[in-house]
Image (cartoon, rainbow over all chains, first blue to last red; front, side, top):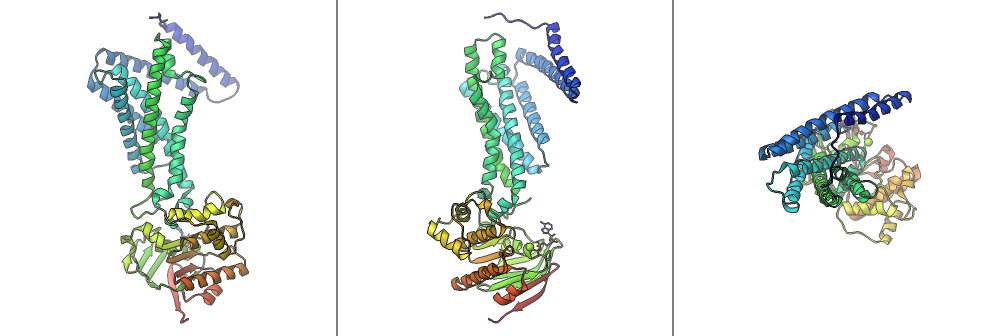
Length: 259
Length: 214
Ligand SMILES: Nc1ncnc2c1ncn2[C@@H]1O[C@H](COP(=O)(O)OP(=O)(O)O)[C@@H](O)[C@H]1O
Ligand SMILES: [Mg+2]
């Protein structure tokens, strides 16, 4: 195994010099963002250090309970984040659908990838379970977030087209089809784009991390491929669940538009 | 055919009793803001009344599948709805929405002639004027061949002469095919000249109901 340079504390601090330079530049240019840059950097540092210690602890004493607990925390955080990021107020029913789609979509893909593709044992092995869960959930969160905004926005802006379609005898499904398709496209497009550019335009974060920490690039790439397919599956599934259930909340049982 | 009993909607409409007969031309008149469009939307079950009951052929609207209802009673909104695409796309989209068999271009041209719209089928519908859009939307509704037409000011953006031609065509078509035409119009003269019945609405109430013996 290649030896890995373990970063010392002073080396980490040196990395912060960059941030200070960055803040200085924004200050000189009169861009009022130095506070945000500082807060983001500090937050990232604290969050990662904490996560690091938690992971070390979990890896030392693997337990199905802790793995499930972490999974639940990630799901709750992601659902909360999606709802917080919506640009307009959304109905309680739509919030429930966001949570349902996130949980069903990510958990089913996660289990398939861990148990069938990678075949980890025991099934709760945190070394695999947690980082892969993190990646599937994180990407699905971004996907649904885009989908929610596009769906709500489309329904509001194109309300007259939807209602026009209803007047011509369309079912709610047909009347909303264009908006649902647009929301789906915009939600999965970033994932598709990142797959197309992968390895050429940029090296994905997970692979970079693995290579830097001494793993053979071939192994890192194998994992990257598996994980990317998992992400694609998870994003697609969560978004399909969300848009297919979500558009229905804009209609009532009399097939009338509710907004 | 339609029968309304003690129908209230917000504080916009309050209709004690109203019957609209089938196979007739009924015009709805009244000042702007009196609730004419709201009445049509209620009849099409795009909105439901807060209290009271609306029946179609003796069945309360709430018990009829709304999509089926809207395929029998097609509504033309006051603001014409034009979908992105060509004139042909806009004509055919109605048939697609209503899940009816598509028709050939000759039929489409014939419908355009009916509404006096001399535009090519492949013209971009976004480039049409307001009056042309209105006639395109009307043509799409005629193509659907429903039992009942609910038309909300179908000729408001037209000059007086074109308006006459269109209304005359609509009335003749309804009579020939034994259909029902319910039409909101801003012109009392049009209502008088062409309708069998006139419903006058003022501030959400039916103030006048005239049955012509034609
Ligand atoms: N969706 C709505 N919500 C609340 N008020 C409405 C709505 N639509 C119309 N109104 C109000 O209802 C009244 C009747 O409107 P409308 O039926 O469009 O009248 P008309 O077609 O006779 O001009 C108006 O005062 C209008 O401002
Ligand atoms: Mg009106």
